[in-house]
Image (cartoon, rainbow, N blue to C red; front, side, top):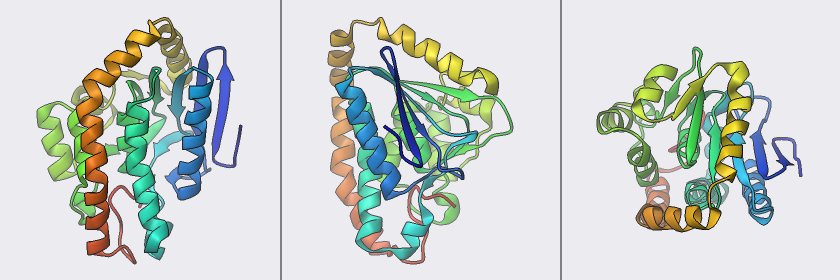
Length: 244
């Protein structure tokens, strides 16, 4: 399965979902639809998943051009993106995120929904930059940051929109491991193959048990975050989780 921006490759028991729009990997409505389809295919294939981006960028967040147009398309994109975090959190097999470089806003929240996150060394930035561009951090975004980051980093990320470099992002909890750029995919594939050897029934049941509350909170928060977006007005404004 392949589109212009999302490719799916199955190798043995590992499915790789690669996002590559040739630019900043904006999470447009079309890209989000293809990610959902790829996850559905991976689940049908009973595979461990690697989610990755393109050279030097995982994703810069929602598509700003859609946000500028506003209306139902923008709201639908927000809903789909926020719900994607719950979809990945609940995926019944292991999920590895291989972060190629820069990752911002909704790209961060998608990355943090994986079970294991590998980052790339280099002059890259990681940030939930909503407050820096004048927006109140969405509830879904706050839940995802709290899920992964240590308490001090969570406060700095959420309230101060701190930009983390690769090493400080690892210390904060964004990444579980950090590798050189040329080692990223081989490291992700090795880790995914190791995770295939877990007892998948136990993995699925334990994931469901420990994440049930988080997933419930995300699903409860989505309509509230959409209402906030409607009240502040989408037309001509950056939205929570949008690419600059």
